[in-house]
Image (tube, rainbow, N blue to C red; front, side, top):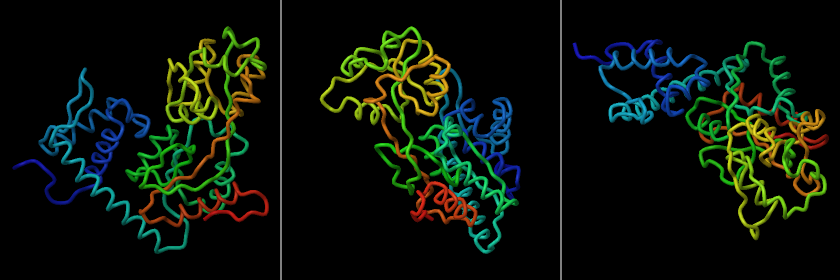
Length: 316
């Protein structure tokens, strides 16, 4: 008998397809481990099972990296259509009931929990009290990964910083502002004179930069008339930037609430905070066309209530 999906497509088949979708979305087995919360060897076995089930080679992996075959690319398109239909079906059925039940998948950033201004904790607290039957699934991801997961229906909502470009398939709601400023670590030439270093001297040093904040922060600091700074180290998480700054070899931006703890220990210093402090808007992002579940609407309402200034209307 020819291999393939014959007869009923069961839960095992859907699980394998979801693993396949995550592997493709993350560009390989290793990168998919965080999203799937399983080891690389388990992912490899699931992929082998799917290929054996279908009798097709779906991808090539080796020193050259991860690459879909033609069969893999075709299956991925079909799998996306199937899994989106299933997600939409669950959403529509959930909408038939007023009870807050089901799953809510949220994408957040790594440093957000320490910010006293974030509305996420109070919103989660109130949602858990209102809807104890809801299953919460939180992921810590970089902003571009949050947006990709929202577009692929792997997340219901994400909280991320304002960036120069917004994804056209997403809807963004303003939440609160996060202040960032420039920091350096012990051993850096500016460490001993961080408070009064001339702004123009900041161009003379190497930078460690977040890929998603680089242009907006540096443009806000130096404007368009300055020569570009030297970015010799990059990272995708705030904590990774802190690691680089602690070496004393780089300047880099950190949220003030993150930098304060290192400042108290004397391991980082804010560099000209009077001139380098920048306020970044934090947003709640959702899919622009996928129907909202009752749980998602409830969480967005709680986020809006927690982030709205006293006396101001919250968004819904």
